[in-house]
Amino acid sequence: MTTAETTETNDNTPAPLSAGETWRALYTHFRPHRGLVALGAAFALVGAVTGLLQPLAAKELVDRLGGDEPITGILIALTALVVFGTAIEALGGYVLGRTAESVVLAARRTLIGRLLRLRLPEMERSQPGDLMSRITSDTTLLRAVTTQSVVSAATGGLSFVATIVLMGFMDMVLLGVTLGVIVVIGAVVALVMPKIAEASRRSQEAVGEISTRLERAFGAFRTLKASGAEERETAVVAAAAEEAWRNGVRSAKWESVAWSSVGLAVQVSFLAVLGVGGARVASEAISISTLVAFLLFLFYLIDPISKLVEAATQYQEGSAAIARIMEAERLETEEVGEAAGAAGGPATVTFEKVAFSYRDDLPPVHHEVSFEVPGAGMTAFVGPSGAGKTTVFGLIERFYEASGGRVLVDGRDVRDWPVSQLRAAIGYVEQDAPVLAGTLRENLVFAAPEATDEQITEVLVRARLDSLVERLPEGLDTVVGHRGSKLSGGERQRVAIARALLRRPRLLLLDEATSQLDAVNEMALRDVVAEVSREVTVLVVAHRLSTVTLADRIVVMDAGRVRAVGTHTELVSADPLYGELAATQFLATAPEAAV
Image (tube, rainbow, N blue to C red; front, side):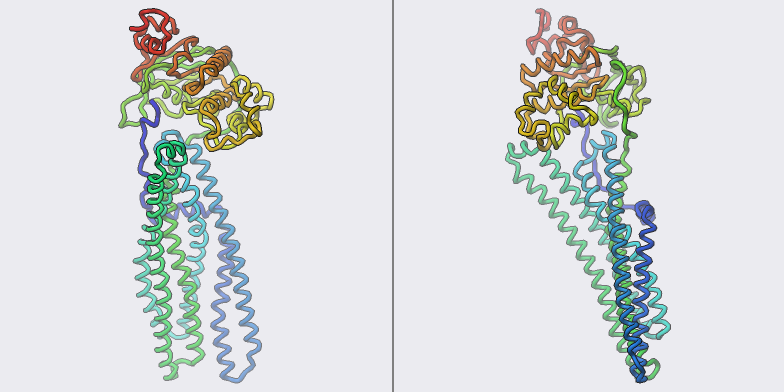
């Protein structure tokens, strides 16, 4: 039974986080960079202070014009304030931008490290494309929300309060008019923010769906073309893209409402202050210079209000990304690390009444499976599809944990082994013999990066790949394409076998490792495996019994149970199921094998 038959995709839609959870998550990303963020905030604050001084300088300029006093000094001071404020804000913007990129880099490193260490069941419950979008698209939103939004909220808030205080010193009546308009418009903005958050969340989910759909299509590209499914798959991906577009437009609409409200608040405030202020100047309650300065402060108020709205908008957009990133960070991982190469002789493997199910809601795959592999030699596992043969390998590698009984390697429960140490002793050839994008050399040394050229050459000969390398235009440095698309099925299997042999394992697991080989290459590799089994413990899963007739022992499995153990000769006559399999494949050596 393969894991593809026993798992299904879960719903990866993250639950909305509370404000407290979101801020704690944001602070986790923000904390290592808080010094640089504080520096950027200081620059922004200094720039804001220079902006606050400009209306006061303008008031002084108007007063001097009215008193026929010299204005050269005040003009120079005003110009210096503008230039200095602009320069310091630009420097602050660079510091924050660089820090924001560092936040994104750190988040991506963390996510990549976690996702590549996921336990296999977690990966099988997830969509790879969606996980990739969390590393790429979702982390990008951290750029603004963990730096710009924090600084904008801090400096905008301080600037807003300082401006309001100075406006109050100018004239409390005009301040009351201004605040009345701002409060009304602010209420509208507050109602809009949740809508931005919801639209952003749905847009990010749709982007993840695009990645998922594309990953599925590219992963089976030949099947897609052979099935004439280009138009159908295009429509599916386009539908996800349109969903992202709709939610992006929805978010843009509500953001437009928020920003328009800010502009409306300032314009209405300006008109109201101009009318009321003009009347107060006419009644000599305030001077014309005070009104000019107040109006300048009002225009200056646009910046802190805009920063506050920007911070709120970025927070709403970022909260959806934070929820998706946090969900990925909560997936269960393995504690793995670098391990030294395998040392020692052949490994022993023992299953003691092992029970296993891929999920609680699925029927068991193993029912008290027991067998023993004492050491060097070949042990084959045969039986009909769904018997649980491949699952044996998954339990040995600790891809899955047994729900009952024990799996022992060298007499030690695999759960007591450090994962990296256990897997360093194992060479594993999967059923579909995956080949990674890159060169042939990169694929061969993937599990043994320290392998020498002599070791590579030796393995190429043993795996019958030497003639292939001679034909390739760039030899070992030839690019093999996405998932080895430039190689035949048999060549991919031989690459996978060579990769496992190059690791010099103590325990070699071969899952249908010769299913795509022609008869000549199958016989040749069977001899290689037989030779390797003199020094290494070899476990083989095979449907083609020609691969396993020379095995030292054969474990016959059916419906998750071990029904017989013996040699080919013994089992042909002793076990009806094996006898039937052998007869079907013309391997029976006695008439009774056809039973």
